[in-house]
Length: 449
Image 1 (tube, rainbow, N blue to C red):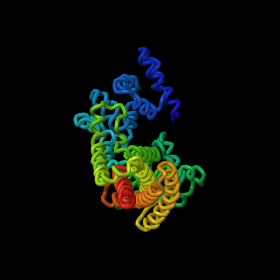
Image 2 (image 1 turned 45 degrees about the horizontal axis):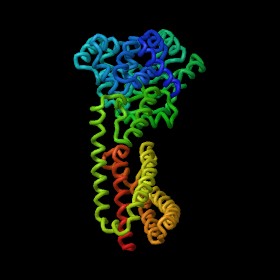
Image 3 (image 1 turned 180 degrees about the vertical axis):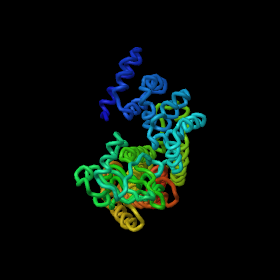
Image 4 (image 1 turned 30 degrees about the vertical axis):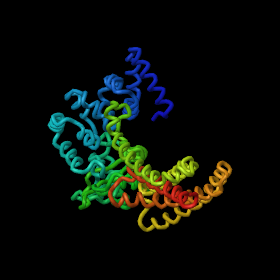
């Protein structure tokens, strides 16, 4: 996979060639890239240039490129493709990839794709489509190689030679009984290094449990990470082998979750097209701008309650942003750590109280340190130790509240079924602004007027 500088260079070359009408070099470049690299390149082009570049993609790669595109970009290209072109792109795709693509295909195309498939492949596809796309069942591929525990290594090796080709990403064969129940795995390494007369049952690994088909994609990714898996069996409630998940599917899950965490902090969707039309982009972003505006008015209302105090002590108006911003940054640090911990499964009810005490201690300590610094600056600036004392106290209070909010808010949102990465920062900012203004202006009204 090319690094950022290489991709930027490729993008510049593509755009320069397209602007000059030299499409042959662009076609050569497209044919030299892997499908995932082509997808990233297409996502980096504005809509019109993207469609021109899509026409230069090798038809044999179109299906894999479509799968690697973000949802919005993929849908935009699919809407411009002819029915026969879509059917050709779907032909030969792996079952798990085809299941992901089917959701975006027009109904008429879906019917024709299903009609063109052999009965066995159609049955396999339907078994994948029966599960949610973000579950183990939705991620799995049904192209598994199974063996029985009573056969010998020699028989298995002769069987593999007859196949002539193994499914992509095969590192183990799955061992099942006569009823298709999953028993364990036997690695290709073991088959090549053990005696020919050894049975599969003697050399198989029974420690690798199958993953339940309803397991979430996030939990699947954690299992692959903690157990260093390359592939894993997917089973139903009865233990029957349904398919397998390979590490390339898990890498996609990890990438999607990382993008989700980053984009959600700004109230955006990781599947959004960076080069989407202005009106569409503005409409999506307007919702959270409206929410933020409403919370800003709440903070403004708090400030309005102390209008008389601000008129008497103008320095308070100058220093208000300091208290609010310090609380906002401190709270965001804690919130980010909590969201990461929740995503990694490191935070539970059993350790939440310890984390709360730890973050509160950190907030209080930082509050005291920076309160002393700010107070000293304020005394030198305004020649008033009273204002310095007021802002120091307000900073300690706001940083402590920010720590408590940063810990408690994502836990509460998780319990309510709300994504803390999506809404946490908006609520946190409101809390730190309101508390910061109230503490600072309230103490100012109490001691300075």
